[in-house]
Length: 241
Image 1 (tube, rainbow, N blue to C red):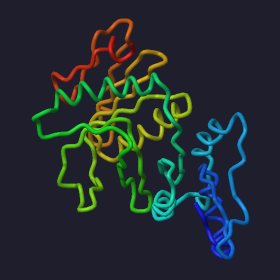
Image 2 (image 1 turned 90 degrees about the horizontal axis):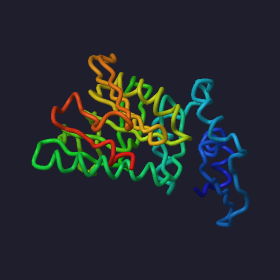
Image 3 (image 1 turned 180 degrees about the vertical axis):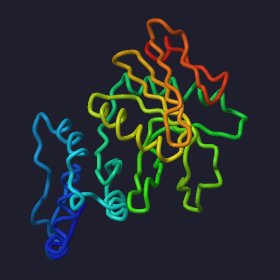
Image 4 (image 1 turned 180 degrees about the horizontal axis):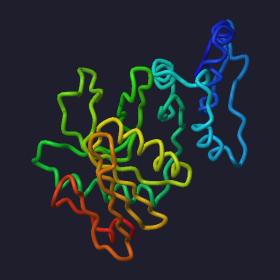
């Protein structure tokens, strides 16, 4: 992101938030690049960033409008949860293999049905409160309210089912703040897929609460089954091959 020096001086706090999220800020003066603002990194950067989601002051939180400004001017992928910006790193082979198997099964099962499964990158905008609008890119979503897609092709509804495939850097985010987000915002079923442990946790969500939880282990269960869509099954052997 390139920013004029005068804008940097007037809105340094905002651009500092962007830098903390992993965005490289190039400061320009009279059309020339003169400085660079980047985040300080070390071996514990990812762990520290996830921990910051519990300790950030209100004044440090990024608004939805600021998040839109960041993403519109960046080639990076980001999520916004409770005012915290997360930079999405490139996934591993196991992660992408699991997403591929899930989407293949879901695509075939939903073909010809009213709902549609889609994979990341695809923005899901959820409103926890009027002043707390979150934007996430789940690994897979099932969309049934297609009337909530606007003229720009942006989806502003709530998926019926959401799946996140865990990575080491996203584990705590997917298991805690995202579960809370999906629970509060009307998602009906949430799958957490752990390729490292060959384990799938399926949450049934109802009226903002966790109605039921099912666990599927690749070593013991041949299929993961959806409670929301009877008959929708994913082979654990294929998922964790």
